[in-house]
Amino acid sequence: MNDNTLRADAALRFSPLHRLQWEEAQQKYVILYPEGMVELNPSAAEILKLCDGRNLDDLVATLEAQFDTTGLKGDVSEFLEVALANGWIQQNHD
Image: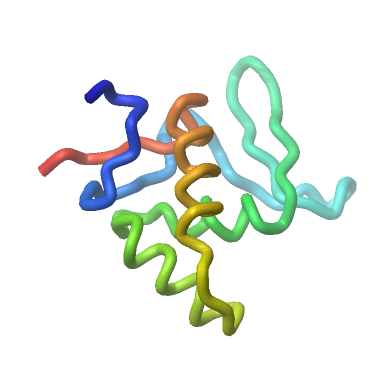
């Protein structure tokens, strides 16, 4: 397993090399980093805001409760794999 493979039991954190912030002019969240900026859709922003040390199951449970829905794990996992591959998040392998 390489570092770009999402582990369900890993603590997920937003990368200290990037910054997640609301851009008033664009009315959306963005990821800022030295080389540029990534505009996020609302779902991506909500997921990344929860990358504060929670594991995948905790993050999904929080989102499902927040939005009163179920069945988000597949989509959330898919996005987190992209975020991990792009270096937007990090995971701790305890």
